[in-house]
Image (cartoon, rainbow, N blue to C red; front, side, top):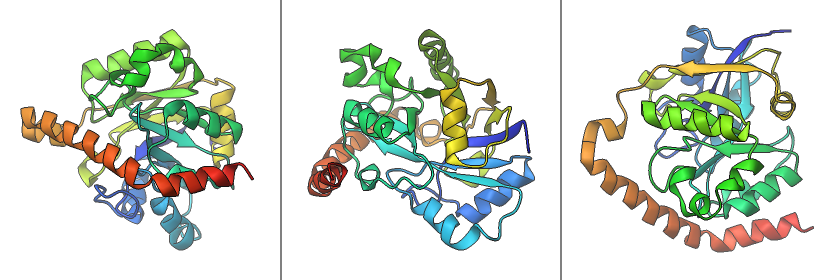
Length: 261
């Protein structure tokens, strides 16, 4: 049994995210060298990073836990981190564009947990900066956790996320949101009990057990580099997400139909 195990709870890989620059094998090596015992793979609308680990690395990696998660792009509530029970496969999770209320229903119906990534960050990308939250802030009550420290966010963004977690009595995660090597390991979540599977994590959060989180701020983000032009990039992403959601409408409807059988 390994208590006080340290995880990075927000990780993007080259195999699973279009903007990920680090192969998952290198990601694992870097985290292990920094004293981490595990990671939650949270690629954008894709499980490909975790699949690569499962098919090519799992039998070779020792003393390190890799959990399957996803950062889901909703149509109305920004980015949501989702963890499903071990063995539960939902193709809909790889079809961006669900409204957040439906996403919550689906995840909870199948025994999973979910919560907003960087909830007080950029417009459109972060839950409190979206129309779903402005229309009904109490949707927060239906989440299981939130990301209270994100290395790529500002001090104010993380402070506001922490306040939100206290207000709604949600578990708080720390995650680096790393896409490149120099950001890996800049944030952590420490669990007080052994976490070996997605089921362990889900049960831990549902029982509201104590955890620690924190980290350091990463200065190499795109918004740090391009300044005011980041606003243009964020608005461009909003249009991209809307278009991609419409484009994947047929695939999403087919995946939803599978849930009814």
